[in-house]
Image (tube, rainbow, N blue to C red; front, side, top):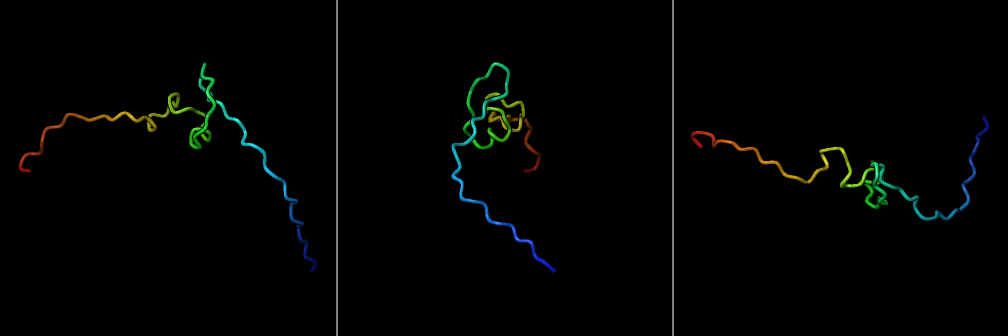
Length: 66
């Protein structure tokens, strides 16, 4: 049975990273953060509310007996 071996790729130096821009309408900022680059949205323009840094505290009554 013959074995096919793949030749190793020649050493190619990688160039600079591809520039990624925010895809929000009217926003022309270049994205530098790895998460922002992966999602395509800047931190201020991201429509996903899970990424917001605002804290929301709900008014709650204390539990009786504690």
